[in-house]
Image 1 (cartoon, rainbow, N blue to C red):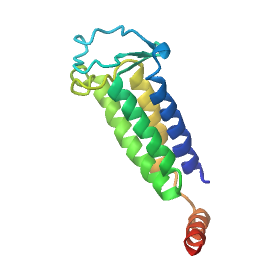
Image 2 (image 1 turned 120 degrees about the horizontal axis):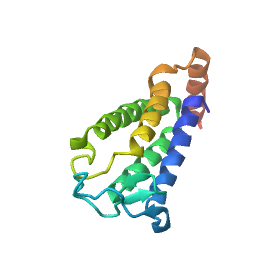
Image 3 (image 1 turned 30 degrees about the horizontal axis):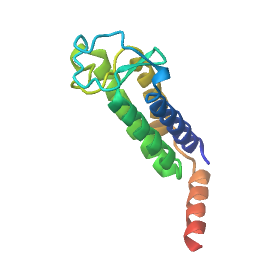
Image 4 (image 1 turned 60 degrees about the vertical axis):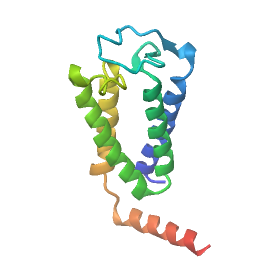
Length: 154
């Protein structure tokens, strides 16, 4: 497994755990910010995960989806790089949304303000490295291609 694949796997596992944690009532505290004050119209499951990160039901579903995509993408280097690039763009956009009050609720559906902003920024920065900057050398590509051919022969 290459570093980019490890990143996709680790981020996948982390986001699955975060997504599942959002459904555990003991880990979600009542919201500090009133839903109306943050323009949040979808309030099912709204609260703060571990008292830090604003979440709701849809937010948890997105965390689970991103996590599962990362786990599946870790199967090959190419898919892990594609996942990382997409994750960098997606979470980079969420950082920008979270910085401006009119879009902090993702059009009333998902809260992305407060501590979510720096968490998304860190995720986007690391994903940018693995998706766009870290390029495999020829030996890694040859090993990856050889393993695919060996698998297809069986």
